[in-house]
Image (tube, rainbow, N blue to C red; front, side, top):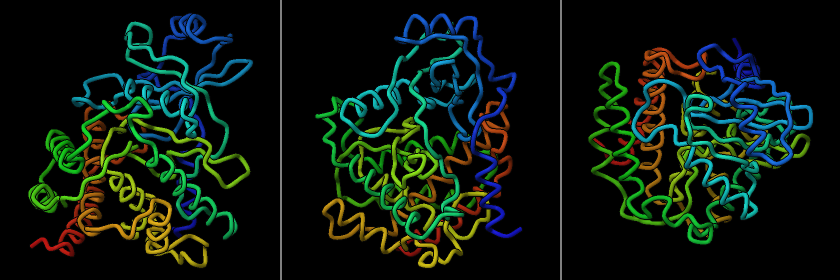
Length: 363
């Protein structure tokens, strides 16, 4: 199969909505009166679909005759400690919406599990495009370049907010971000491990011992990538940033280097959306060097120091995330039927991360 065919398959696979699976169904007889009580101008009848995309918190389209809403919930079943924090999502979306940053308008957080079985929140459904393939097939060079620049400019705008001005100065520890993230994802990987992967074991030891001393603090999204953004229906600009489950206070380079993941990965087919093997100048997509230079200009930096370390960390973190998804598949709690079921992808990512670590001096 050609890479272009794989791209279109990925867009088709993850776009739009589907029928709600039995194990993720909601009791509309309880949900509808709750929403009527909590959301001004809400009026049923209510119909329910589930968005195809997303591996973590099940996300639903709530359709009514007058408008559509989005519901995000914790998944049912046993969960990892501190995972699926929809209450944190709600808090940060509310703060950013009040500040004028492009996020959906939040309506209500329901911590009471008796309504649908788990904590959830409801927000507006922002109309637009969710783009799942980094190569943006079918678009012009100019549109591709503008979309990438809008993604980067939106990230720079997020990092320009002082957490205290948003009322989020207590949203996380302001220092030692990479140490905390490495500890968190190392622990998550440990409890999700299904078989030994030597490169992951090497990285688990090397990363915490080689963290750069350079400190900065901003609000960090934690999963800032193309398919967590809604683009305007016809214009090449971001109109909403979604999926704030992993948000916290931390180092802005955490978000930026994670956002660079598609450039950092080798050609991986449709397993992970990436830019490996593509002729970026012909497509109108910035190269890694061009994108980093633009980010530095937007944020007033001379460079991104310790880039190879951050690259190793970023790809390792992705490997740990996918290992967690594989564990949920084994446990029967994965939200997405397309979730990986074997460790092949984790092994590929770990090998790539270790290559970056070697470039950073690992032996």
